[in-house]
Image (cartoon, rainbow, N blue to C red):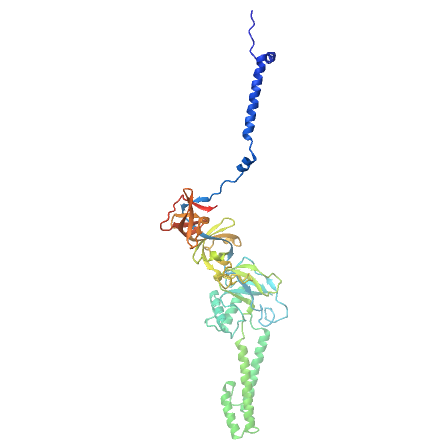
Amino acid sequence: MRERPEPVGTRPGRLRRLIRTRSGQLTLVVVAVGLVGAGGWFAGSRMQSPADAAAAHQPPKAGPVTVAAERRSLTASVVAQGSVEFDSPQSVTLAGLVGAPDSGSGASGEGDGVAQRVTKAPAAGAEVREGDVLMQVSGRPVLVLRGTVPMYRTLGPGASGDDVRQLQRALTRLGFNPGSVNGTYGQPDAAAVSRWYKDTGYSPMEPTVADKQQLGTLEAAVTAAQQALLEAQSPGDGSGGSGATAGSGATAGSGATEKARSGTGAGGGATAELQLKSARQQLDAANAALSDFQAGYGTKVPAGEVVFLPELPARLGKVSVKTGDTPSGPVATVTSSQVVVRAVVPADDAKLLHKGMRAQVETTDGTKADGKVVALGGDVPKDDSAGTDEQQGTPDGGSGDTSAPVPVQISVPAGKLTKSAAESAKITIEVGSSDGKVLTVPVAALHTSAGRKARVQVVRGGKTVDVPVEAGLSADGQVEVTPSSGATLAPGDHVVVGR
């Protein structure tokens, strides 16, 4: 039987035999030549002359950078960083000694030469109301009352003025009616003050032992002067005259004068008249001394024991003293319970603001609140606790430099942001908005010609043309533009913003 031929490639020896034949060798040469030619063509297509390489690396021809004009709504605003603070900060300083106005601080009012010490310091963050005890000094209270006139002196019988009237009104509000609110401190006021102190749990500053002794001495001096006058009026008469008293000194004196004129007085009329005149002068002096002392005799309010604050209740902020300190200088700072937001804006931005503008406040923790501009520049109340001149005087805050940053105060509704006090906040104040959608271009596209006319450059048909415009509201890097008469500019037109 004939053997079937095996397919080429099924046996290795077969291929080797084919290559050894002449026709196989020719085939291999042709394939090799083709591969070499293809490699040469590929290498040649990738090779460049130095000139071609340099030309390939040249930058493209410069052209304008453009942005399409568009229609959109604009809202212009001033953005600033500020802080949330309690409103109406005010330093509290004691007007004088706590205790006796002219001595130490003992409850009896008698000085012992011991320096005054804080025995109970104010509590930061606490709320104080009218009649509350702010702090204690050497065991005596410092009480809080509402009023705009600061405490500057000891108030007691005989004093008069607006500060007395202020005290009388406060006593009336607290339920210790002093009677007439007439601005003069009398015995009814002293009695009302005594009731107030006792109700608060403290001893009132009533007359001291020394005061009482002084009163007795002055009363005795008046009595002695009265007796001397009676003796001068009736010399040689041990009865001292017919029931004459100090109040009837003028009548008795008239009789003595008659005796002196008739020459029947002891030692002659001239001597008797001199004695009578001297007795009268002594009685007048004794009565005047007693009257002056009695005018200030009674329960007093020492200068350091009352602090008048314009608004109550108030919140205690920074406390400057601790137990054991001597209360000199500010002892604390009080604020209202309402918070405000304070910021400083550049002078150019401040020119866009006015009172009543709406603002939005956002604290660092994301809390938001609507607010309103209530003060600008010099109208922003000074923080008395800061100890600086900032936010004072001129609209620029007191520096006199019109380019200086300007302080701004924002009010927020009651109860808002109270928990965010002392935190920083972002303030956004809306200064204007467009009436619906308007044609806008980037601010960088707006130019001013030599004639101070606004214009934009528009690329049309491969050429750049100037289009005169009128600029309007600017916000978020965009500016409202209106083509001038005879000019055209539409949404989608490419305006030049750079080259």
